[in-house]
Length: 62
View 1 (cartoon, rainbow, N blue to C red):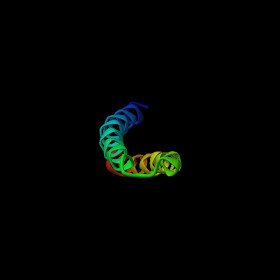
View 2: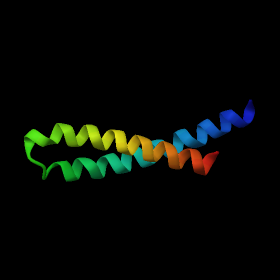
View 3: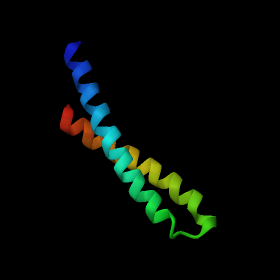
């Protein structure tokens, strides 16, 4: 049970840092998008970043 806690902590820290960095980059890019497409873009980016960060975090910490 202790190993699961360590793994979750590792993934949590890793994901938080990367999610914030990637999301910041996505927001910067979104500034140049047309207003009507921005909402769809941001939803897609959130989903993509979540999947990538969780996958990489699990691979690194698992």
